[in-house]
Image 1 (cartoon, one colour):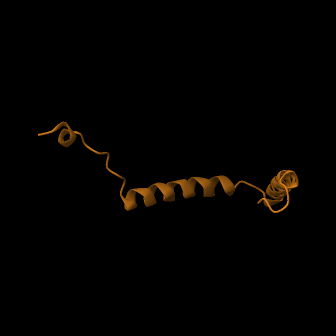
Image 2 (cartoon, helix red, strand yellow):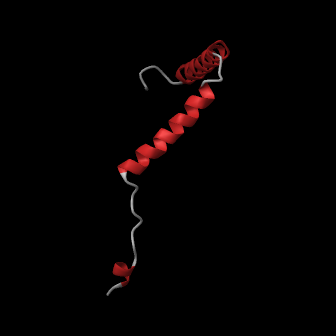
Image 3 (cartoon, one colour):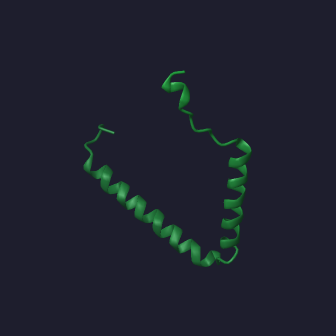
Length: 68
């Protein structure tokens, strides 16, 4: 028996295990979001979008035309 035979490869998780974990994570997220007021969340999301747009605009302004 060679040394390669004695080494075991880690098993990948089953699809059922992955789905169960995702379900648990979604349940936790759902419970957190049930306490959030959408009126409080929207300005934050808009601010993130504006910040990303501004950052990308700055990136594109530094790249010579036709180089993207």
